[in-house]
Length: 431
Ligand code: KG4
Ligand code: ZN
Image (cartoon, rainbow, N blue to C red; front, side, top):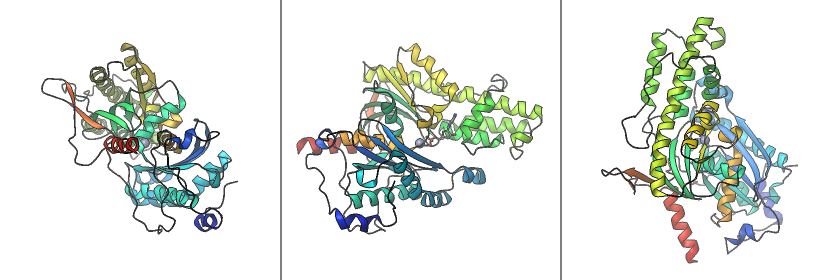
């Protein structure tokens, strides 16, 4: 049974005072007699997730609470309401994950938590919970990049995925094409200039009057099966741009204008639509999906050209993030990978959308490298300022030059995860 979390500090401090973090950090997991359980916590957006994963990659237990009712009520994520929901759920979700794993807090070896990117108000709830457990039980602490967790969870479910690999991350807030060179080491080939593909799915689903309680994407994918994808000719974005960036704002506008011209009333739920209205909606859904995915196909083809120049022996590609659970996307990008003789990997659909497992596993990947922080001081006050990174780049940026060849450029004035981890790795090697 999981322990009550009512006042964990007092409980712990009475019988295990301030255990030391191993001085030789890289040996932390390697020196253990058997696999060690790591707790992961995710609250960056609208899912409260927690899981326990062992250092040898076994999922011991997990729990997830989504904010379906809020999504339906507001038609999107409202940060204040989402935070309140996380606050109400977090203790129970963590306790449930531990109970499912048959692990007590005192058995844990480390705690990992998403510290960015995401909504600060929401990240804060998970980070405070993780810090309180890490502080009370003197556990190593790993602050996780949400998008890296999406990418690395593929290595939990498939041990064949060695670095380097190309990775396409497609979620509600991000579209990223990267070369993953190592844990904490990414080259960003492209990102979205405006909206992410998941956002375009969600917006289109709302305009079509779909039930978005499980997210707009799954509802739209289902309706698209009934539609004619040739019914409307939407323009594939950025075909003349010879780079790896994405843009979905134009497609969203085309879809909105088409829906208006068809007099589709999104306030009328799909279930109440007449059969011809339903068919029109399905045609829009199918036509949208074909073009949304074709844009991903185009950008992946270009990214492969760049990636092969930067990493000539690249043989693998990973596609992850919520939208990667889409079956149509899986089959189309499967064909692109085949064209280029690449081995393509997707995490299982339930691990594509936000969850605690991906965070716990990313914690394991960092612990293996000795990259973690000591627990917070025992006297850290409850209202302590915590380090959150709502906007946080994953990789060092790579852009095409006038010669048409890709080069790495640091155009951002805040450090990416990759530059921070490179400094930490150097410091570790020097010590
Ligand atoms: O990764 P995720 O769970 O959260 C973010 O980090 O944003 O991704 C959520 C996004 C939502 O936009 C949702 O509609 C989309 O992933 N999504 C899908 C599917 N399942 C989830 N989009 C298309 N088809 C799906 N089957
Ligand atoms: Zn996500």
